[in-house]
Length: 231
Image 1 (cartoon, one colour):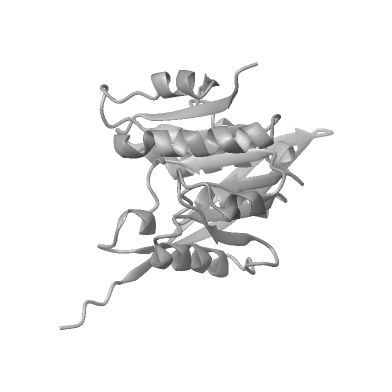
Image 2: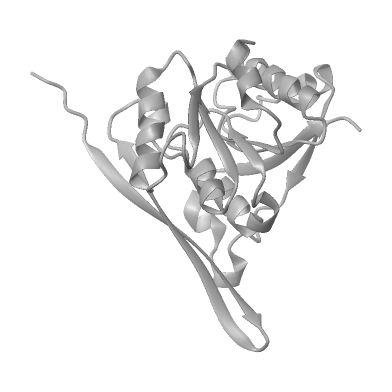
């Protein structure tokens, strides 16, 4: 019997309301994300991704025209939002997971982003310093949602980030992660690789349209971190 995986399309809507010269205005962005049911980790949009995507949406003026790379993109919701907001985006997935890379390209296709024209997709494996790291070029922002899902990979992620921050000294790494165990920590690894971290409050995301961000993440505990080189 052939195992046919079913694709479902999930819609995410980002909007902001504000007033200019007394006139109420609203900006809106719709993103469609394809997901494969009963597939592996990278084919599903985890709760951390919408939080990071909302952060990018609400700071879209800061991302406009900037060079952004998303680590472990998967379905690539945050990176696609950044691209739609005018950033120059490179989406990365493990070079050892060609099906995941193909699905990342599929997410771009569904949102009318032509790969190698509007957005780039490349293979990049955490902790491996191959030539494709140098292909990224100068970066302003590194982003990633729910990269810290397995303690065995924490150092591989952070050594990759540390390398990218070494060659892009003013860049920052914005990441969201889902707390799965109170025993898991990256604090010692941040110190080891000479990194510092700021925790951002996510409770105000979506306030202008009356969104309660916790309606998106349910009972999950999601944190938004800004990681940079120690000053």
